[in-house]
Image (tube, rainbow, N blue to C red; front, top):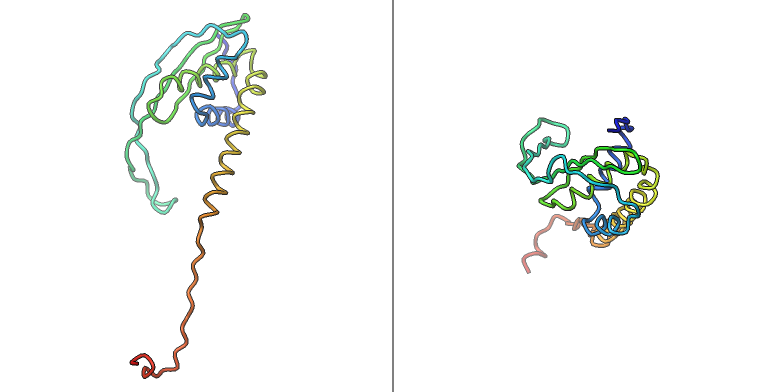
Length: 162
């Protein structure tokens, strides 16, 4: 079993990209993936609840905001003489999405790392960035700037009575 330690910031980046991708995007990438490794499910995919915490004012005291459904999966992939373990968590009840994300996460810890980075992570990251830009542009187009015009009042209320 490969126990290579990955850089935590890169691990956060790849986990964010895999969980932010759609299930359909991951399924298409997996369907067309050449030389697929053997996959063994070690845990899940299984859905559960996590408690979501927030802070008052963004930096104040913590409070429990509520619960969110999360699906997790842990898999081992074997192929080309190496083995690696991957884990994924996705928001919502999406077992196939979590399983596919865990498979690609495991492959990032295997000999296929560079191919997964170039063929999965980077294209998905670009697509997510474009989606975010479009959403921001669409939201910005609906912004209304309000301003207040002060009415000059000369002090006499006689004109208002007419």
